[in-house]
Amino acid sequence: MQQRLLRILQDLGYSLGALDMASSIAKARARLDTQRPALTLVDLGLPDGSGIELIRQLRASAPELCILVISAWSTEDHILAALRAGATGYVLKDRDDMEIAFSISSVLRGGAPIDPFIARRILELIPAAASAPEAQQDTDMGEVSLSTRETEILHQVAEGLTNREIAERLFISRHTAECHIKNIYKKLAVSSRTRAVNEARQRGLLP
Image (cartoon, rainbow, N blue to C red; front, side, top):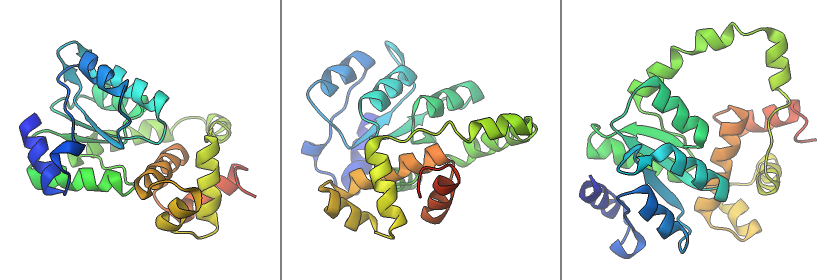
């Protein structure tokens, strides 16, 4: 699988020097002590534990990081645990190279790709969530917390700036800006810039 991913990433334009692989959580943590990746591809079934703990650690240390799970595990518990820990997207290993490459590209553009099989599993949970008391839903409206950088970028989005313009204004890479916007989408439970701005205003996060 490592060799397969190396080939896919090289086809996407990455040089071998820009890529690194770790076969366990311990080795990944050692790499992270000296490196700050823009994108991580994480499996859940690792020799020394669950990748979910690694995802949680990655998200805590780098809120803007793009984290894509590529795993054979497709149970509801594993899927939801990974997404709650901070995974950006989730794709199954048995997808072909083109589908995995598309998911990687989508994450880097600020998207949150979810494997179709997994998306169906998540949709099955919606009826239960929709039946929650309205009062609880109202309470949830105030629970979104954006970082200082995310708030700053959200204001730029509200001004109508593109990802490239935001990156130039804030002196960050375009990929970093896109990852921040993706995190904003996730926290606000939206899928577009217009909805993000509208939702933020409803929550009092924007004037």
